[in-house]
Structure formats: structure tokens, C-alpha cells
Length: 357
Ligand code: NAI
Ligand code: MG
Image (cartoon, rainbow, N blue to C red):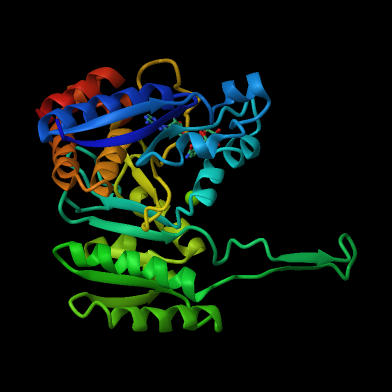
């Protein structure tokens, strides 16, 4: 028939990546059946430490051709420090995908789920529900700089922040559009224009300018220091938070930390123009300490699948997966041990797939 079909590059990677990716796929397949679309899955063994040990590189020469025309990449986790140093495994794979596919928007939902004890006192599901949007390609993480007179008392070290109009405008546009799609239609910008007196006032100017194109979106800005405090004290204030690379890096860990376990936090590395595939992955890594025992929490991987469907335009299916997760999490026997439950990876994954159908 002429069902909608999506071509997905599946890359399980290392450690628990190989255990949680199959559960992510189980739930994606269930969603496809229920909502009437097809998934064409191509699985790849590269971007893993075993691949490196065999080929002495993390990726084949033609990796761009092999995954560049897929609709999305569904990624597990990479890294096994006992076999391959992390800077080689991570830089040789994931960082290449993010850069070469210009995945300049890093998107992380921050949502307090039922059944997860909240580290912030007195918060219930519904109180915390926002997105952190991080600029992923420039800003404070530039490679422009250097040092002179190393090792002497005259040693000088400089690293420049790079803010470009194109780079700022495109991340702001992405964030404003996301805010526009959400019921509260509100955006918060992270700044520090009182201390970083050149680039951050420029960032603020671009926010003001972009806001004019989104008259239905309300917005505010906070300096990064007090913003971090508000994440903890008043997380209910936020809807979409947009930030530069460094500020976004910190906020995108602090946000999910305010909602409990690392085992459920998903993320998207997005190329909004869709010139390249976007990559969806759990926030956590390969967890060598528990790998092979079948007890890894599959929720972050499954939720990443929901974000992927949303990106592909299967919004209803994506939302249904998130609801299925919410239905399952309150049940202790359906939760993995990291959430105080007794389920294993497979039973937890099956429970969510069942809740969906
Ligand atoms: P990690 O996230 O793999 O593990 C941190 C702790 O959280 C461990 O105690 C682990 O058992 C636990 N944990 C993580 N995910 C879990 C899950 N789904 N269910 C239950 N418990 C879970 O971070 P770590 O140990 O710092 O790094 C291990 C390897 O993963 C390294 O090689 C690192 O470079 C890599 N890594 C890869 C990432 C990626 O592929 N995006 C992200 C973070 C780390
Ligand atoms: Mg980080």
C-alpha cells in the first residue's frame, strides 16, 4: 500500500545500548502498527568499541553515504573505556554525526514522571514539564584560541567564544517554533549580559529581534546564575528554555536531574532543516557497570523513540508512547531496579509496548 514509511538507521553501539535499543524498537514497531505507518530499519555495527577493535577505527570510510539519507538515526550509547579510550570512541563516532550532520539543536525534555521520586521537595507530576534547547555547534565551545610561553610565568591562554548571527538565529527560530507549538507558548532565554558584555548582549538583541516574528509567544530572559536557581526552586515557570552551548550544556543536565533518574532522560540532536538525519539517543551512556545483566532501564531509549516519531511528523504516535511510559512507571513490578523496581529490561519494555496497544 502507500503507507507512510520511514527509513531509520539503528546504531546500538556499546554496553547497555545493545540491551535498550531492542526495547526501543519493540515500542516503535508497536506504535507503527497502531498508527498505520511503516519503519524500515537498517542496523549498523559501527560506532562501537568492538568495531574499533576489529577495524582500528570507529566508523567505515563511507559512513556518511551509509546513513546520510536515512530519515533519522536511532542511537544507543557508545563507549567502553577498558577497551578504547573515551576520547577516541566518542569523538570518532557520535561527535562526528553531530557535526557532519549539522545537528545544531540539542533538545531535552524535562518532565517529572509519575512513580519517580522527585529530588525537589513537594513537586508532583505536571509541575515540571519543559524543554531545554541547547545550541550545539558554536558559542563557548570553539577551537579558536591558543597559548604562548607555556610553562613559564608569562604563560597566556586564550579561548574565544564564537557567536554568529546565523548560528544564534537558527537556534532561536527552532526554540520559538517549539514554544509556539506548546500550549503555554512561552520561551525563556538564558543570558549573562551583565558579565559577558559583548556576546551575551548580542544574543539578547537577536532574541528580541526573533520574538517579533512570533507575536503569539511570550518570552523572558534570566541571567544563567539565577536561572539555575529557578530550575530548582521554581521549575513550574518554564516551558521552553533556549541557551548557548555552554549554558545549555549545564542546564540540560540540571533540568533532567531535577526530575530524578538518568535512566529515563531522552534527547534529540536535531538538524531542523532536515538536510541531514537527526539523531535520537538516551542521555545516559553505555553503563559498563551493569551491562550484560539485562537490568538496564529502557525508558530513556523508548522515550527517545517517541521524540524521533514526533520529529518525523508522527506526533500522535510520539505522544502515545509518552503516555504509555506514564501509565507503566507507577507500577513497581514494571520498573527496573534503578527505579526501585523488580522488572528487567525486557519485561519493562514489553509492558510499555503493551500499554500502547
Ligand atoms: P553512564 O550513563 O553510562 O552510567 C552512569 C551510571 O548510571 C552508572 O552507574 C550506570 O549503571 C547508571 N545508568 C546509566 N544508564 C542507565 C540505565 N538505562 N539503567 C540503569 N542504570 C543506568 O555514564 P558513565 O559511566 O560515565 O560512562 C560509561 C560510558 O558511556 C563511557 O564510555 C562514556 O564515555 C559513555 N557515554 C556515552 C554517552 C553517549 O553515547 N551519548 C553519554 C554518556 C557517556
Ligand atoms: Mg553535558
